[in-house]
Image 1 (cartoon, rainbow, N blue to C red):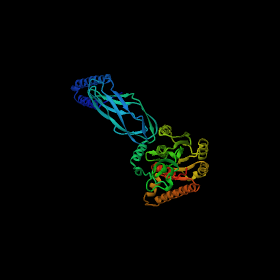
Image 2 (cartoon, rainbow, N blue to C red):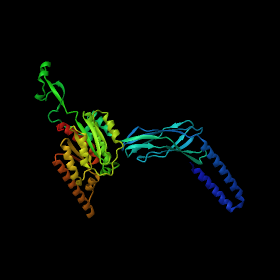
Image 3 (tube, one colour):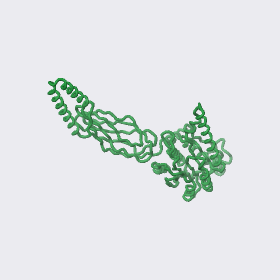
Image 4 (spheres, rainbow, N blue to C red):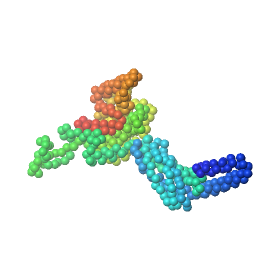
Amino acid sequence: MILPARRTFYLLGVNAAVALCASIVPDLLPLWYASVGLSLFVGLVDLLRVVTEPAPQAERFVPQSLPLGVKRTIRLRIKNTSQRPLSLALYDHFPLETRVSGFPLKLALKPAEFAEPLYELTADERGKLVFPCLQVRILSPLQLWWHDLKLPVVSEVKVYPNFAAVAQYALMATDHHLSHMGIMKKRRRGEGQDFHQLREYRAGDSLRQIDWKASARMHKAISREYQDERDQEIIFMLDCGHRMMAKDGTLSHFDHTLNAILLLTYVALRQGDAVGLGSFAGANRWLPAHKGQHNVQHMLNALYDLQPTTYAPDYAQAATELLVRQKKRALVILLTNLRDEDLDDLLPALHILRKRHLVLLASMREQAIDKALEAPTDNLEESLNKAAVQHYLHTREATLERIRAAGIRCLDVPPPEMSVGLINHYLDIKRSAVL
């Protein structure tokens, strides 16, 4: 595509001025003819020069995977294959599911010179995204025309749940700074259930820890050291229903839930447990429980393109299907967005699961509700709104209390706090040896 540049409009303005003068002074008519003819000739020559030039060489360097909602740097490489210096305007056709800024990029390249401009991109949706092309506008030698080209530089990238939090957790665990994330490592009450190793007696060890046979052989006090139980199983039950589409900020409740699942998966696998997942409400997937750090990648691949649906959750059917698939006792974590009208369907399903498994209900509370309570009330309408919000929260808490009274553990937090809340509950369950 050929587009006129700024100098073309200047040239048209000059010809218009000459035409105006020729209309007043007829003797200037030959000058107007000459001006128009010269302008057409110069414009055509300049157009042919820019059209016949070889197109620049372009590449795009994109990571194979991107975390959801996290800025990542994209690098472009463009080389001038022409025999003259080029002035370029560069625009990347990034996916609609992403956000970028700073385009178009202005570049000036000498012959055989290349540039590697950078820009930041943030993915707002998970799944496979496609960059279809790069768009380049080349300014003609006389700067009368832009030659608009679309270079077929195709790139694909997979957007996963935010695995950046996993790296942050691993770093803080190494530095013993997990409290900065809100994760509380409580002192174990009593001893763990699994024998870990023998070691020399230390001041403060219980007499029950002393291994008298080993002490007799070594001629010094030897203690047994225990650890939290391992080889247990964690199963996530993920609600993919319509309420999970609700958004707090740029991320939906569903995306916050996936981030929490990913982080807890990493933590549980490091503890020696196996992790699996089942989804319901229109997007039914089943990932059996497996051990090993490689299962983090399996979980990522299973979840990266999973999306919430418009279906209503059927908790009873989901619980029945889980009992068929999961025979071994496990910690079942049901992740949903609870409403008080769900209780008649949800409570029987939780009772079904509790017969064989330890159940944790994790529900997300909209941040808009908390903000509504904090907002000042200056008139009757705002007072009525706040009273309605308080009534809703009271009803919600009453629903949760009925679930807790049935022996079901509950977690009700805003979406950004879901990851830390789940990890703290998991670690508490491990240390209390109730699984």
